[in-house]
Length: 231
Image (cartoon, rainbow, N blue to C red; front, side, top):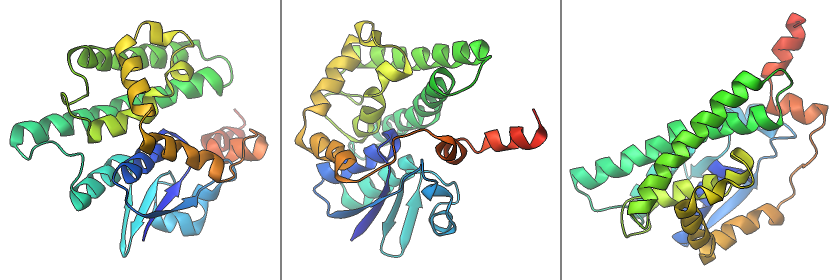
């Protein structure tokens, strides 16, 4: 059976949603990142990047959520566009836009707004600007199409959904007023039974919620270098 190493954050939720949509049997293995599970030798053997998610499928191990989505979609054969050069290139460019744009800029926006020490005005401005810029590109796309690749729900929508859920925390509480098509998309996908089952994983497994010194050390190991340098 497929094993999904999971933490309730956007990238693992992509994989949970895909597995639920395809009704693929899988086992959830919780990785409590605030306890530092991602830094254990056993986990780093599976995922040298010490991030979630990681997927095990028999003797095959895949890390990075976009790589996992592509692996699963090619294995299972669902939620892919028609197999033409045009359709496949369109799928790949939007998947990579989410992977290299939405994810990193939104992650850094959350980090500097909610976790970084002062002074941080420059960093907050940069990443908030870039997060808005990327979401406005998605908003424009969804103003012209029901889903990211047209009229059919698919793999790119699955990749986008968990990040869209985070928009109030990434941008601000009123952000959806400026992003009505993303809100429409989010509400529709969130209402799907598979999305409801994926979200339920968060309450079915126990994860540390406090952000104490040990959690900060596990989540932000770069801070330890600052302490060591005396900065």
